[in-house]
Length: 95
Image 1 (cartoon, rainbow, N blue to C red):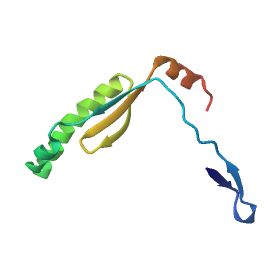
Image 2: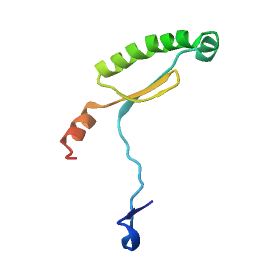
Image 3: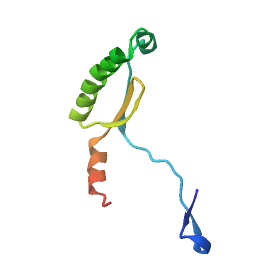
Image 4: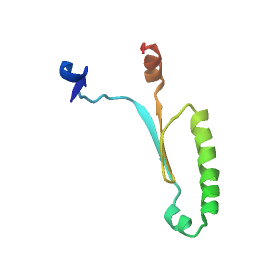
């Protein structure tokens, strides 16, 4: 991968390393079983109520337990927890 810096004729390219990293983490994927069938039988306001009744407490529990919500995907939530030793090293790393 190359990154262009500068502007106009002064642009220079420098190579950025692309490499993986191994980390101990816990990942949660959670969704509502039968959501498509359920949602097809609901009016928009009912569906919004259902989603709020599910997403709000799930979000609270994840955050209460120091999880990071990566994304909401329709009716699904993806969250992760870094293991304690990784959290300590992340805090010690200057930004």
